[in-house]
Amino acid sequence: MTHMAGEITEVDILREIGSIGAGNATIALSELIQQKILITLPGIYVISPEKVPKLLGFHEMPVVIIYKRLQENDNCDILLVFEKEEANKIVLAVAKNTFGIEDIDEEMKKSIIKEVGNIVIGAFLSAISNFTDMRLLPEPPIHVKDIFDAILEVFLTKLCIQNRKAMVFKTCFKKEEGEIYGAIILFLSDKLQEDLIKRGREWLEG
Image (cartoon, rainbow, N blue to C red; front, side):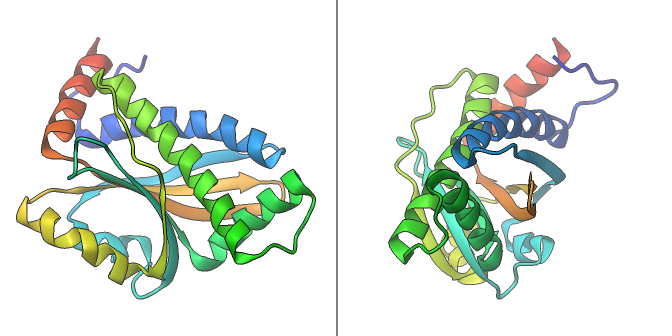
């Protein structure tokens, strides 16, 4: 348990969740890739959704996104985002180290990146569940390739109407051959966000 002096903020709580989620995902991805991998979070932010492209440097860039929506909670989405070339790096790492091949077709690339997303998003959902004592039931992962702004537009209308924030984790996957950069974005429902902050503050102050 982490004890913090002074007022505990949303970012403090997110930092704890990110640390737990990244730790869980590190273990699972290391097993998948069959080499040591470390996930770090060089930046954590709570911002308006429309500011996300500029924050991440993904404005008008082609990206690969894996996202999950929570069952019984249509306003909650969690996204793992990679710039296109960064997505190719992690796909090739899995293909090479797990299957011993480098020449893979588009269907296999899609399958691999979905599994990576499944692991990483699952680890973060597990961390959130631990903080809130809520049973979170995600739907199967969805794979999307497009310009980042076009994908984000799908979420923006309902998010802006509800005046909700985006919770953003800049993410770095460190492996033997180098680093791979991406982001995890949480668009939490009002209820889940309230429970997360309340339970997280209680946990950190306990």
